[in-house]
Image (cartoon, rainbow, N blue to C red):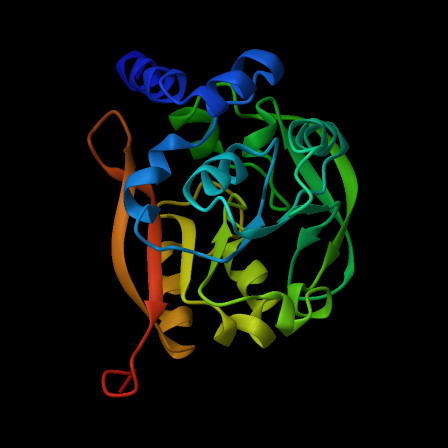
Length: 246
């Protein structure tokens, strides 16, 4: 774990723009996503579960001309996000979560706020990732992506990223009306239950297959102390007309 943190810090510090943000705002760009995403040449990125802007930072580094639309419902992280990207006119933040219907829901705030979820934090999450138990709750706005984003704003090729701590399936359902606009979907999924009521990776994969997306690969695999796979970042792309779901 310490070795991974040191490698990540080195990868950030050798990139002047990302190093400046780390030093000035204490926001570490998610450089672990550089390898799977570096060849995609995106012109639009939707970042659902943006937190302080960790993923948006690496997306901006990889796709300097892209329009980025981000979503973060918690005021504290959203405030930091806005300060990090205050001078980037092509990055827009919405202060809401994405789900299958417009409503208000209780956010279960983790002691590490990037592990917060609209689902109750489970015992396995706290056991495998110490220090991520529930510290507070807050009522947040939840909206459907396809009721916020105009299709014409999603310029091809486009990437949809989700990091929503067990709420992936509900968030994807809220994107259903615009899924066809995306060339890739990049989604953190779990293989064990970390949040109460969450859909596991096999369910998310099956749902996306039914919506014409195939799994390209799994990255950044996390394991428990017994070496059991816990979660990973999954990359999807649409089936071509000749190889779609049967």
